[in-house]
Image (cartoon, rainbow, N blue to C red; front, side, top):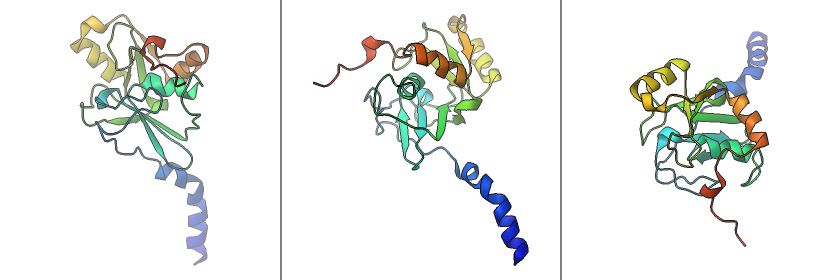
Length: 168
């Protein structure tokens, strides 16, 4: 009995990470809390989970970056953050990757739901595969999640002409 208790105590610090997992996205139902658009393409989706376990879905990684940087929307403290791998996701089903592990690609010529030109990939190899399939998208820059957050402190990722007007 003592051995079981000891082993259980050893596993406690690992428990929150073991329980962390992306929530299911309902395309065409979930709305972005930053720009209020309904998510229609899961390839561009992002997800944040607050400390209480509530999931918030975004139609563009830029919306999530801007909200976390304080550019608008309700204040959000994210305990978990996931981005959809653009290459391996479909329009209706995202393949989630932890934001800290994602490779971000920014090219203003790339059309995204909010005009940010920001795409996420689970690996550098997936990004290279995508650029090989779509050579017209070359010429952008590669970022980590931390670099994108740091850049987002200085300026919003979402162009202001894409945001709805403020409520009176």
